[in-house]
Length: 136
Image 1 (cartoon, rainbow, N blue to C red):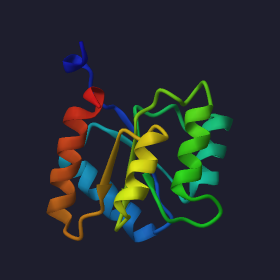
Image 2 (cartoon, rainbow, N blue to C red):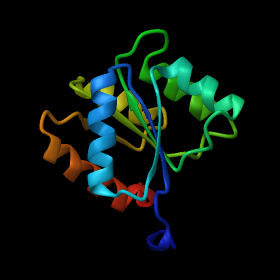
Image 3 (cartoon, helix red, strand yellow):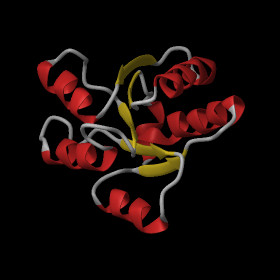
């Protein structure tokens, strides 16, 4: 059933402008047909989603460490909301303990990936996630 589905919209929530730019470039390299939207923290993402400023994405990448509202708190809000609870969420961080990763997965994240330091590694990770997102 899922093999015919394709990610067409993706929301990246990350407070680092350089990381958002790099992600956008890597996403274009991985699959240039995916529509990209961004938010600078969890509160910004929730406000944009709830107000309709951005359309409901097929996939959300959430950075863990952000000001105003971190990724974990944003994840909990997303999974408690009937409109957003079924959108797959990938937690995305430079580093996190195994316990923290398990906690995110237990609260509804589909995947936890470490931010790669290399552009081409990021492209490869995005290709893999985009291919398997509906199987998560």
